[in-house]
Length: 192
Length: 263
Image (cartoon, rainbow over all chains, first blue to last red; front, side, top):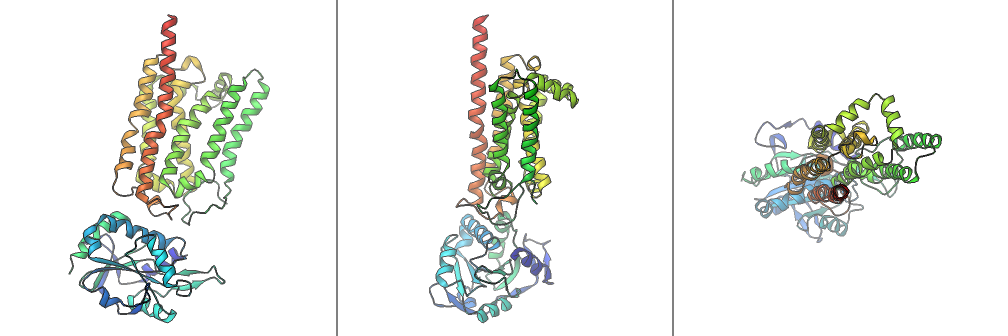
């Protein structure tokens, strides 16, 4: 469901085009500015997204820890790619924002992210705050699917890549291969 | 209803999945075999049990969980399936087929000439085996075929057919059609299944990135990364073949030596 939603979300964004440029990812025309929002990190401290990530390659992803398919794959791909690109890893930050703050406590998020990479930043907040963050980033707001404790979330599946100059030139839907990431990230890092 | 194991695009779970297509493909030849054997009572028990072992191995390799894991989650299990089909099921099927049955089945299917020709042309048999190996382990082959039940079925059947073709010159149930030269058989098996497969296996073992999107983008099973899983697949291809191929070579060598002593 998240996959379907993500595909629809990506295709519904009229400003995206498939790259014929230097990028393997989906090119954003025009580039998008880095959003402003303040959420809470897994240490319980306020995290000003724009201030904390200034001058760094920033990979922003909205997901949830109970996600059965898309989120673990996207994060595993990012972790694998960061392992291969130490220069990129030193100058970048991966930010995971939960779209399911009711279940994703800071501890739950930290435990989830540590399975992939202990340096990944996890953020949460109130439902209103995370919805505002999604709107600010230009992705569709996640929706709850189902009732009871086992509900799932339909959410955007793309990772948005902000260059050190604060602009997102590309985004990466579910299905992006490691080779595509490895091709693009050094190019994005150079856009400072 | 799912008939054959294909990529599922959902998280792996130890929840059993029924694949009636697998049961049909395994049970139909088994029942036909048993009925035929009942009518032809002089078949020895060892031959019957060899065939039944082949069918049990065929079922275990094709059905949940091995078939499901191999079709959509782990390249290493995909490779294990390949090794079981080509080096387990195929030779056991040939060994478990009585000569009279082989003659009758091949005659009815009008395949007598084809299998005789393949048994005598070792280069062609080895080439077919390795062409199937390369196609069904190429990224485009795996990603295309594993995405559908029909494609996955075609892949599995091509493995079984290529395994039978590989072993025909050595284990042909019709004895006079086997290749008689031990040296030729040993060189053939060593090159076809011992040397050439090392090349694709090395690609898998030493590739820096996952080659197959099917397994790279599948929800992870256990703690293996996609690259580690792929390396394990390469090692399975390299080492999984060793005991069977070298075992067969050893048997042929000692039979050859015994034959020479008699002379």
